[in-house]
Length: 315
Image (cartoon, rainbow, N blue to C red; front, top):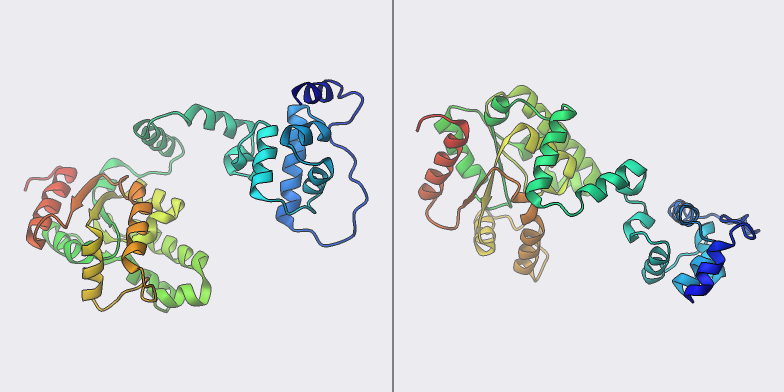
């Protein structure tokens, strides 16, 4: 098979790299599939391969590949993987990942791909400074944002910390509800997740703009939106209030609210999966405090000491 592919690639003068589209039925085609087909054609041209060569390398029929390129073939993930391997690219590039849309993106991805988390963090911070996305160090220090899942103690400890520092205290969820004119659950039900993220962004931007000194209790899912989380990291000292899954569950239940898992028979497993999925993002915080390790007073003492150290003020 290798010799056949090589021969086909070598004789590109005899066969065009991007063949003229054959006559196809005049039917509505999915914009996603059309864009996917265009990326396949472009990647094939970049590699200097004819359609026959790619089909041979991917072990798919040429007709099947033609349908994919024309946007009429809804192929399986396995076939897409085979085509990606034949084109010597990642599946993400084939599907249209933003970091594959230009040579500069690809070069940056190659440069950063094997770096450690610490190196990537330094690069992110330097890029933020370069493009003016962050705030000065003092302004960032004096805004303290508490992150973590519901039931970690953000409201209880946040209010105490604000009183101790003499800072205002705000719950971002309440600000979001004020902007939307309805409760969080209604925002999701009526307008969807994208609308919620817009309200979340607006509330966070206003808090940063209005309060030079503040303690903010953030929604647990804020870290799921990279743009909003970047904004938070750039403008606030962040503290992850972490707790065991059982403590999260019992504290939320004590508040009389099992959202967002009220209808689940496997609530604890769901909670553990959510915590596991978000932990890598929560760990980007400047400080982490385990609120399951002792009493509320002990957790507050740790929080107070850690934050005052960050603020570089005397206890």
